[in-house]
Length: 141
View 1 (cartoon, rainbow, N blue to C red):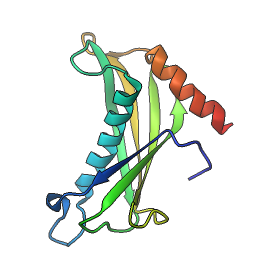
View 2: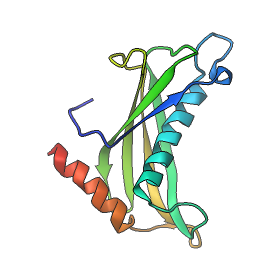
View 3: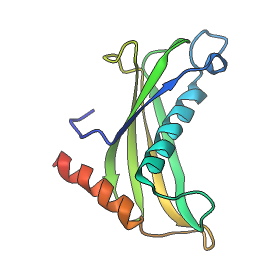
């Protein structure tokens, strides 16, 4: 990943139920880890998203699995801003473990659009969120 400032990082213990019959963490669990990182980041910023008429909607999500993670482990999800638009942001994810922080196990991204749920149309990102994200774009330049 290019040298970009770290937006957010979270440690998440894996659960036994996250492991599949092949003896490693199932690919679906990675998406849950990425999602949990994004949700906790928004909570930390105090950007309200629950029960409101507007909020974030994930329109694209992807992952590339580089090496299997085995239970038990503590995954660390790192988040970086790739692109900031008027009503959207693309967040890149990198997954390592606390046990082997130098090894990248997976990379992924999520494209998020801020939506007016009543009209089901995109709208500008909240100013608090935009200012926060802009600081990371500016720092990368």
